Image 1 (cartoon, rainbow, N blue to C red):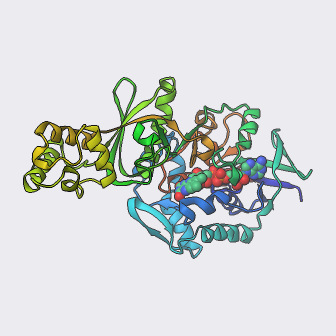
Image 2: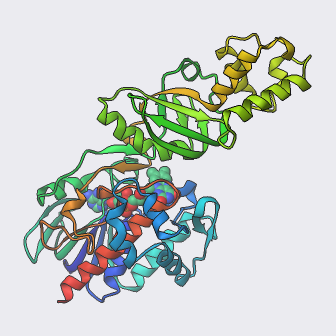
Image 3: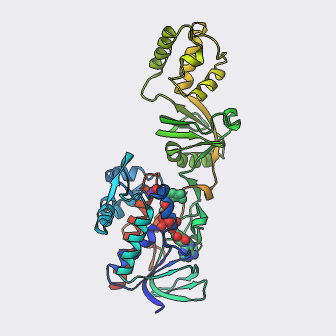
Length: 421
Ligand SMILES: Cc1cc2nc3c(=O)[nH]c(=O)nc-3n(C[C@H](O)[C@H](O)[C@H](O)COP(=O)(O)OP(=O)(O)OC[C@H]3O[C@@H](n4cnc5c(N)ncnc54)[C@H](O)[C@@H]3O)c2cc1C
């Protein structure tokens, strides 16, 4: 049969959930995936363990979606993180909660999640076509026509575009869906990398002297070129050969992309506070005490338990001190400068890694053109969207997959109901 009620393009988390939600309503459902394998990105998500959702309360979930989180109120009331937890428990896949509310399958294997979704689709009789990319879609009221690369043609009453963004294209997300959305009259907002490492041009980044050094529980503060604070994020980070990465950095990257765009790609200042829970006077006092109790020790030895050694060597250079000076020889002024640097270690951010290397794509199908209660296009009847193809993106921590599952559920359920009336 080449005729369906609901046809989903894309076998990522949004598409898989859409297929299940639609099939639950006992309509004919097909899911078409261009790759030979379903859920390729899902399989590598969360370091291969699949950070399926986040256990935080709903308002926190929305706060962790910097890209149009408010668009999600309605869909999250239909299917939210607690529903995701219950859904997987119902499939015999209990989830466990880790730091910052991140939830993983108890097996620690993404494969468990993908296999359970496939079993559920099979149970509901979803027609699954893999290894056959959709080439074109012709939208026509009541019957849309999909042409597949193999030459097959599919007629469908409703179609759900769940083709993802265009980051990590080797997983199959190459932005194909944007072309058809445009064809259906939609606006695609500017695409940009989010949840992505940052590049910096300071000498100490360029000469790789800090490469591989991780810092835990620091605070990052991003400033715009006028010196105004844009955002502050707490967490862990790592220095890389091109700049910085790690959870706190990925969370700040959305603001780097949009601020640089606003200021014609000018470099941005970012400071690292090594001791967010101490004010500068407290750090100065600590350093003064270390001076008094380690009078004869060299500066770099006296402070080696206070900050990581490699960073300390650099800080001592930056305050223009000989690291062999004994603590008694270090002036109060130099210790104050050191404290200031520890509270405001400067980086000049020149950008992010490219979209292909980003975890998530910012931008996409304009949300004003999508009904938030159903995920249906406001412009083309019978066309629905789900997941990262839309101009919605979240921080890492299970929030993007939550968005994909929630919008996938709403799109699948609504498309099926449209076919039943
Ligand atoms: C390395 C990595 C780790 C991540 N870890 C996490 C995490 O732990 N937690 C989290 O919340 N998020 C994580 N994300 C983000 C998350 O995986 C994505 O936001 C999510 O997969 C988006 O789901 P989607 O279904 O919208 O799109 P995708 O998962 O991108 O799926 C889209 C599918 O559509 C298919 N497709 C595209 N074009 C066609 C076509 N022409 N015909 C047929 N099929 C087509 C693609 O092959 C693809 O399988 C991670 C992302 C990456 C890259």
